Image 1 (cartoon, one colour):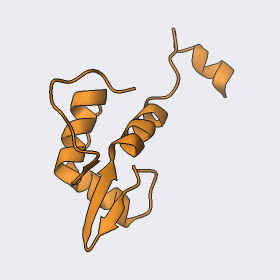
Image 2 (cartoon, one colour; image 1 turned 60 degrees about the horizontal axis):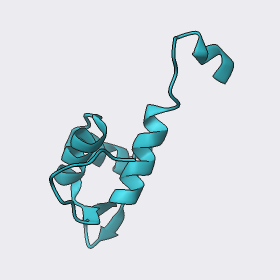
Image 3 (cartoon, one colour; image 1 turned 120 degrees about the vertical axis):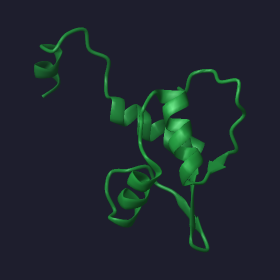
Length: 84
């Protein structure tokens, strides 16, 4: 779940706003150019809708992607072995 922000976000964000949202809501720093590269290369980046030529990233998808990217909480590096 995203942290409470004083800023109200639209339900779908363009690339620069999606980048800012990921940083403010989840603490994940991803440049807009990285989002562009991930989207054009069909990587594990967040999915987006395309309207014309412009990708719009749904907040729900950004939150789900950030949660997957951050992974499970661990109390030590040895917790990594149990997940493997």
